[in-house]
View (cartoon, rainbow, N blue to C red):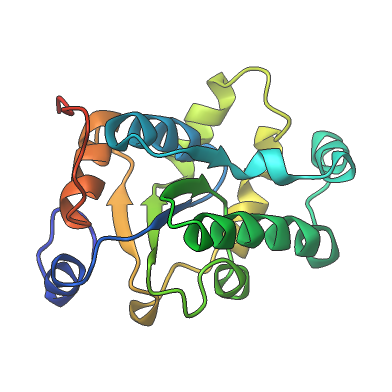
Length: 191
C-alpha cells in the first residue's frame, strides 16, 4: 500500500495484529534514520540503524566508493536478523533501518515473520540525490546512489510492504506508519 491510496492492503494491515518489529527500507538518503528515530520517539520503541551492524571492512569499502557485494552483506544481514529475532524472542518491540534493496535480503530479515512489518520509504533519484549532496559526515558517498537504484527491487504485494512517499514531511511519514500499522503512540505526532 502506498500512503495516500486506500486499497486491499490497507484493510489487511489494519485487521492483523500490530507488528512487533518495523523494518524501514530504501536507498541511502531516503530518510530511514530520521524516520526511525522519530518513530522510536513516538512509540517508545528502541531503534537500531543498520549501519551500526556493518563490520569496519564494509564501512571502509563503501567510504572508498566501492559498492558492497553479497559476500559483504551476508554477515551484516545475519546480524540484523539476529537483532530482530532477539526482540521478538524477548517480546520486545523494535525498529531497524536497512537498505534491504533486494528481495533475497528482505527474505533474510523478514521471511515468514508475520510480526515484522516492512516499510518502504520511496523517493526519486533526483530528490534523494539532492538530499545526499547536502549530507555531511556519512560514509556512503553520493556517487554510489545510482548503483543503489540499479540494485533496488521494489517490494512486491506478497511482501505486505507499506510504501510511504518521502515527499511527505517527516512527521507525516511517522504518523502515516503509526496509523497504517494500528500502533499506539506514546507521544503525539504533530503533522
